Image (cartoon, rainbow, N blue to C red; front, side, top):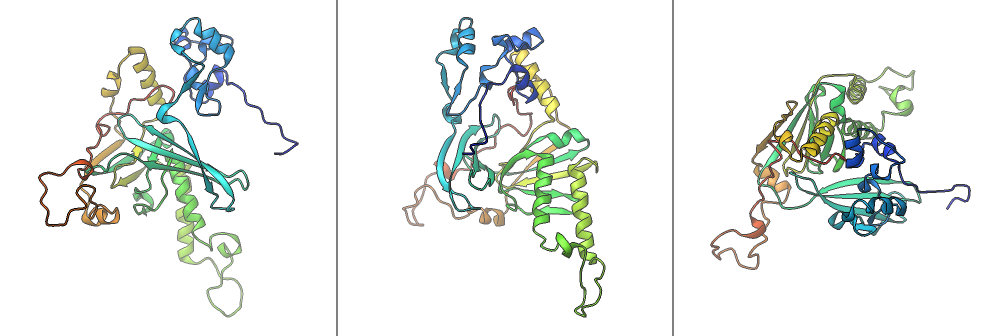
Length: 351
């Protein structure tokens, strides 16, 4: 550790929770204001401090337990959402480090596995999203119309099997061309810009501006026309992420239906608060996101072959090919898609 640096943990106030987008307690919502000196205005769900449990400040716990006997023990286990760690090797410096993994369920979507790696030796950071559960019968194609800057803040869960298409700049990222990630529309575009910029060795330094089109050893020639078009393409892609080029469409094609696009954060927060006040999710059923169009499709033989689904056999695999089977059972049957294609995903106000 650095002897010149001190590291302290502290409990956030309800006001700080709100600044981070975390909802305060039900008492604060009913009061219509936030009082940091009132222990009941602190949502205990937001008091997460290391370890594998949600730890409640002892003073806060003592004050709230007098009014709420349902809080139970001081440490509340997280169950399946518990973060687990396992040793691994840093792909950058090859030193020993740890990877944190958490399995969680997204309502009306599916089970996902979140993995995060942070090397304390070299600072390398990596975040990855993997889908869990069964293999869906159909693939999905999500078309999002980005008409305003607020659409850039939509949450995006892009799996490692999904492809991305932006017709306005003739960008087509093949399926599996980018790692799985959980980000926003802006973050997805910036990640693609970063990958495309780093993939061109002649896009930085002197090679980007000083080029020789011949071997005569004379003066530097102007920029190659192909490279000039590539630079213009990257510049427009960056302007899209900055909200300077609107509107445009972004298409996420996932043959395994493991990708998801959320609503505009302002609308999602308003619906979550309304659902909490009313005690039901009727408001979600009455809301339609007109900027998102989701369609199902049957995967082609080539897609199933790329995913290894054509030859998969998980039942009666010890029998020879001539054995008859009365019915397909177990995991041989593809899973039905959850009902998240026709209605908005209702989530809590702290999301």
